[in-house]
Length: 357
Image (cartoon, rainbow, N blue to C red):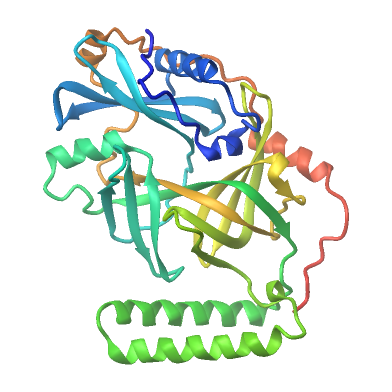
């Protein structure tokens, strides 16, 4: 089966570099990846198109590494051809990142969707690119409240990042920090519900923190005082600047380019997400306990309480569209987490003692 390119061609996503395409692929190469991926997708889903009764919306995930690849969304038209609308790189995580209330909004410039999650642990509203668009639309077609009881699994890609040493902390420092974060989450929850006293307490704490940093920054490095942060970056709502502790890491390979991709599990104030970055763009050697600092493009999957329709297709629709239902047998070219971690540890040298504040 062949994919029919749209008239405008493809605009390559900036974060294709993060999944192992340091040299941008040519358009004819992209067309080949899409054609091969549609015939043997790692994941596919279909649903009806509300704006085009004769068309069918479809999403295909082309796996080019362990849990990462290229996602292609488009439409099947009356001529039974698939017309891709856009393609984006992706990285999937296995863990649940947040159980907070979710919202989904369609973007005005194309048929992609953004997820919105107000997470109290980081103290800001998280906006991320929705990965499972078709699955969400299916639930939206069949439920009055499709997001009731749903959670989300967040991940991110980065094209620039560095590894920092950890801050020295005693067990008492750790307990004090956990108590402070718990109190802050409680204040944020009450302030969100309209508690004026909680709003005032938060304002006072913010002013105290600002004053303390101004005093210490004159003779200390800011990263010896700030353990972690997550804040919006630039004009794009899905971009963030992050500093967080590395909880786990592994290496994988892009099956096409053979470039190494490092996948880090980073904890930022209790929010955990997987971050993928090209090894060429990561400064330093990752290790558990160290910190990752960089700019990320955030994405996420909505996890529906009923298990959803993820990974499932309509058999009759597949037969009508003449799509090969065989999954891609080629799984070579990626490093498993065990081998990747061993190779990283073996190549690591130097002192790993934490930086003292």
